[in-house]
Length: 443
Ligand code: FCB
Image (cartoon, rainbow, N blue to C red):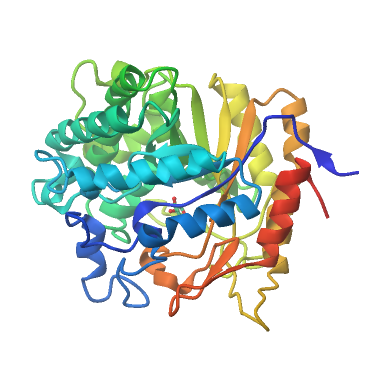
């Protein structure tokens, strides 16, 4: 028996501006930190930049037609801040607003509900030059950009996300240095995280004011962690990973503050907090977006300092080396439902990368079908048990510029030939179109 979903369940796919649009110098767009980062030798595995990516700036009508073929009733995409306010703050670029106007109208004409992420990593470089997310001036600039954008689109867009993955914005980009702006400084990273969460709290009322009836949320990448062995040290390592990776972000936006053990572990690197910050970031939201791909397995090396080794199980992996472990999604949603009070949850990203090949004009990506199917199968049971899950967005609609991996890592339901920009619906896309139409997990 096919596992069925409640009526009205949202079936979508997700993308992000820098990953799909290309046209980085067109129609008055300003430079973003990702333009600068990608142009720096050695930062992108394939040496590529955001041009042309999937050229969706020009091809969005074709892409929206493909969404129709896939039977999607929702589409999650992000707005490029440097198209709207090229220097971060100050002058607004009308052509940028016009572009997203056209995208939104085309989606609505196709009966596809637009879910808009306001920040999916393309910070205007001019703001980075003045300190980026580590400084409060960027919060003010963000709020200005949010207001202009929501004023323009908020009559038609009713689903908004303030940020995508604050962990990536802060830790991956400012402590680990793998993403733009490529810094390696824990103190700056934690201040950036704090400021991003604060900007979320300040943006929510601005969005509500300018988009009557809007549903507003934030998207977190949450990775359940499990101890490598039953040893006390490994269990403690798994807990600390959980505290730093998950709780550090979900607790403050839920009014629980920062997890105290992680705070202590960070010592002098913990962020500066101004009076009122914690209350501001705990503003009530309408939904939490959950991005889930894989789990973490934690091991304490028990060397002095007790380094936490976070590793992946070396079997059952997608091409990137991420383990396939659907049970962790069940554990994750169960935990969020038990410990927090979000009125609704959405899976805003879930998907897999494989080395797809085109064979006689087709892409037989059976492994991707299997990945998605395994993750979807558990969801109807969770919904029945009371988890308020309202939608599932596959990452990604189409193969795109996968950040530091360039176009090597393909996550799409639709194949992109980056030479010709031809699109080919993969077998997974065809299968997903049967799922969306049946509102059930089909074979
Ligand atoms: C997430 C990002 C998304 C994409 C997937 C694979 O962390 O939000 O843009 O890169 O990973």
